[in-house]
Structures are given as C-alpha cells and as structure tokens.
Image 1: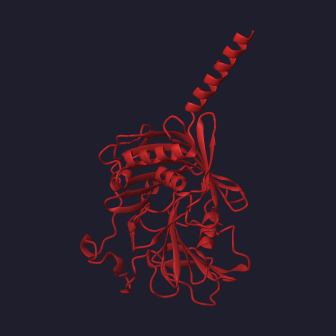
Image 2 (image 1 turned 45 degrees about the vertical axis):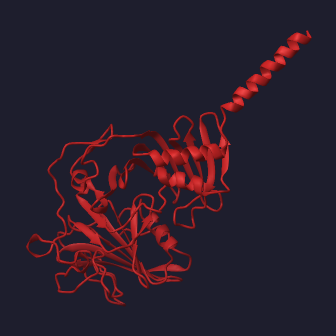
Image 3 (image 1 turned 45 degrees about the horizontal axis):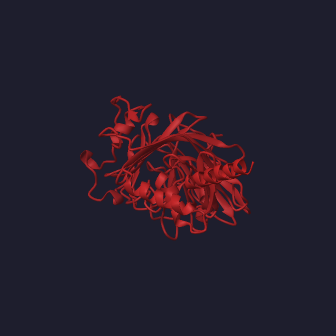
Amino acid sequence: MRRISWMLAMVLVLSALLAACGKKDAAAVVKDLNEVVGEMESYQGAGVMTLHTGDTPQQYKVEVWHQKPSYYRIALTNAKKDVTQIVLRNDEGVFVLTPSQNKSFRFQSNWPDNQGQVYLYETLIRSITGDTTRQFADEKESYVFDVAANYNTHALVRQKIWLNKSDYAPKQVEVSDSNANVVVDVKFDSFKFGTEFEKDAFDMQRNMTANTEEGGKTGTDSGVTPAEQTGEGGKEPANPHTAPEPDGAVTDGQSGVGGDTEQQGTEGAATGQEGEEPTLAEPEGADSFGVIQPTYAPEGVQLKDDQILEEAGDYSVMLRYEGTYNYTIFEARPQDRAVSLAPSSVVDLGFTLGMISGDALQTLTWMTDGIEYRITSADLPQNEMVRIATSMQEESGK
C-alpha cells in the first residue's frame, strides 16, 4: 500500500514538473517576441475590425501586408457599403487609394514609424515589450497581454492582445477607453509570417488598377490609370507644394487649403461670405452627394449654417459650427487625380488615415467613398476632430 502511494506521489510530481517545463512566463514570451520582430521579413494577415465609436458598430474587413523594411499595404473594406480603401507605403510615399472610384490621395509622411496602428504586428509587439507594468495570462491556446494603448489619442487607454502560442501570431485585439468600454476590436482570421509577395504588390498604379484576390496576390490590371497632379504641359510644377491655382493664387498644396482663414475647395470651389444665407440650389450637372452632417458635436457647439458651393460645375459643401469651439467642415468630390499634400501628421481614424496640417489654424483632411473632407479650426482639439470625423463615416447625404 505504501509502495503504491509512493509511486502515485512520484507520478504526480513528475507530471507537475513536465507541465511546469512547458509553460512560459511573461519575461520569456517578451524575449521571444523581440526575436520574432528582429528576424521578421514579411507577413500577411486578414480579419475583421469593429469600431464601437457610434450608436451602431461599424465593421471592416482588414487585410494587412508588410515587407521589410518599410513597405505596407492595408486594405479596409466597409462591410456595409462594400467599398475598399487601401493605405499604401512604398518608396514614393504614403497613399490612400479608393480603386473602385479611381481616387488617390498622396502625402508625405514616415507612417507608420512610431505611430500606433491596431492592425500592425509591430505596433502590438512594441506595446507589449514597452510596457513594464504589463499584465500576462496563459490561456489554453493563447498568451494574453493587457497593456497600455499607444495610439496617439487620449480616448484609447488599455488594450488586450491575444497571441497564438505556437508562433506568436496575433489572434485578437481589444482596445478600451478610460471607462473600460471596448472601442476597437480586431479579430484575425489568418496571419502568416514570411509571405512572398509579387514584385509590384506595393506599387501604387498596380493597386489602383487591380482587384485583390485570395492568396495575397493582386489581380490582373484593368487598364484604368489615375491621372497624377500636373502643371502645364502635363508636367508637375517645380514645387508641388506651391502649385498655382486657376485664378493665379498659390496654395500650400494641402488639397486647396490656402493661407486665408476661410477654406477653399479642392478644385477651386469658392467659399461663402460671412452672414450669407445657405444656398440650396445644386450646381447643374454636378456630382451631388447631398449634405453629410456629423452625428457628433462637442458640447456647446451648434451648426451655424451649411452652404452648397458652385464653381465651374463642381459640387461642394461647407458647414460652419460655432460655440465652445468654432470650426468649418468642407466636403467635395475631387476630380480623378492624386492630391499631393505638404508634410503633415498622420491620424488613425480607424476606417482610414487622416492628415493633420497647419499650426495656429489646423486642418484634418481625409477621404472616404470618393469624397474629400476637411475640418479646419483654430481652437478645436485634435481628439474632437477625430470624433467628429468618425461620426460622419456611416452618414449619407441629406
């Protein structure tokens, strides 16, 4: 009897030792993660991102490609509208593309260096390794880290990251606000390290004229090519950031935002005068999209007026808000051309990238569904700009 009890005890001890040997603590996992990132050459991931920033959650299919050292391609497909935008970085710069509408948006930036993106592997690992107060859990098939969020906005405070035990690939990310409410949730359906991409996978023209197919390859070209911004004779101006406008004025290249305090249209739309009543007549033959109003406004702010503007048959809208903060929202559908922006800071709006430019007078610019939006203000905080922009995403013109 004693012999059986002794043998049983030995079996239990050995089982405990074997189980302990198979487990890793947070320090061991962090060490492995540093090695994975250091040796990583490329990856490809796909999943679903849900934004809980409005009354109704917004879902986007996300596809992420990365090739060392600095090539990125992020395809965000609005599940409701079935419209795909592509954020692209290559040797030529950073682009936001809407291939289905032949719209391209180019700006100068070092994105995503030192800027958090919830769907980028490097960002997630940097958040884990950089937080010395990280919380760690060992679940059945995942290592789970609870760490500080680092997404250049005060609205996002904490995040939980699930990593696959077998290869440290991301499985899920939840980003929460100060009240522990989940604001962004990403669930990866697939993630593969060491993906071999086609030679032109990160080429702007290829992505503008090709359909995305399964397997990480782009389809054959359709022959549609976006026209680049050009000066006289089809050549770019000597300085693309001081391109002359049709009326001879010079802008800073920021989608038609001039040095004046009033905004101007991307294609030369004229702004309304102070005290002018809203114009309800739409330009004849214009590509109208109605008036798209945000569902969110900071406390103490009211809509002053909205105006439909007309210049050379173009359709554009200007909304002016006043109160605690004073700002202008400008909406226009630019012609099929790439717009080159002056150096600016990149802002992650979730559904796309936005660009903040200016000092005393700041402008947040972004494009979605072929419409270019700008919020300009001298006193509106950046986090409020982002909230306003996000609230406009699912709205349709009225």
